[in-house]
Image (tube, rainbow, N blue to C red):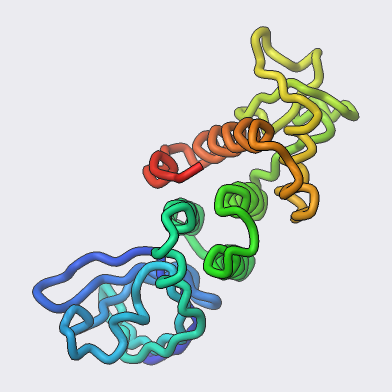
Length: 240
């Protein structure tokens, strides 16, 4: 079908020529799509603002040989303005869309789309702290991609917890028998926070101390970058 419609969240954009942009989107039904939005850099463009990063739109596209062409865009979630107005939210959102871009390189999924849209909506509404929202998103997105961390039983041998040694390369907490010498140890509060971020227990997550959140953030960042196989440039700028 040469013309199709889908809901999409904008991950990133690149300039093309004098007035056009290449827009990379994660869609509800068609996975990750790269398409050309013609004339959107002109001030008279009808839908340029709807195709900025962090925006969610109902788009109509025409299938092209190498890149599809965006012919219409109607706003569904105008999250860009609220997110970019708050630096912690902006840096968190940047890390989210970069992660989604990498996780959906081969093909997208409805679960990844819905998770990203929900996380961006939460950031825009400032429902929770930006750092907590980001860490929760990263853990859930990796779990959906097949890298679910274990914060209870041993990630290597399955021995029932509780354990305190963390080995991100293996997949989470490990028992003393499986822990390599010098493996980092997590306290009970940090383990509980990581579990809460993974399951969405926001009441507990928001009651934690800053020191606990900082340790959990370090674990999430290390876990994310290891399993993605490459660094996330946006994480360097995340406001904590």
